[in-house]
Image 1: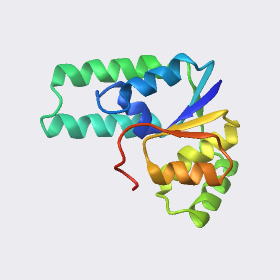
Image 2: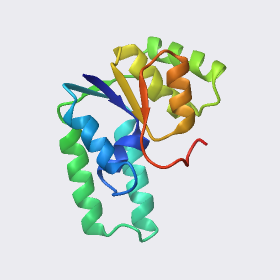
Image 3: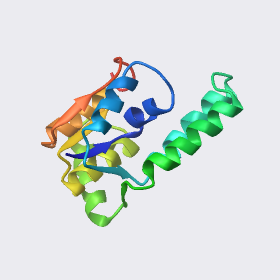
Length: 144
């Protein structure tokens, strides 16, 4: 299965929360993993926020960062190309969506993913509206 994950879903690999086990199960069934070029900086940003707020120790931050870099080492990294920008513009015009979230969905469209996984309800709706087979993991929250 060709899987594209967004940052909100993939971050569940590094911080245990609702949906973490689901993310691991999707990855076990995956033959090819792709991600938008912005995924790593977005996750690192979130981990640093948790570090600053005291929810993550320096040791745990370093461990999570190392694991993230190992996890994406063999993944296909989808670049922001004119075609991806075109997809993202259409997504933004037809959905309630943030720009960076549109890039994740646009990358899944560009790569012709078999499945797109997110923990963001608005992104899920946009992906489904665009014709992607999509799954939501975790608790309702961001993007509701």
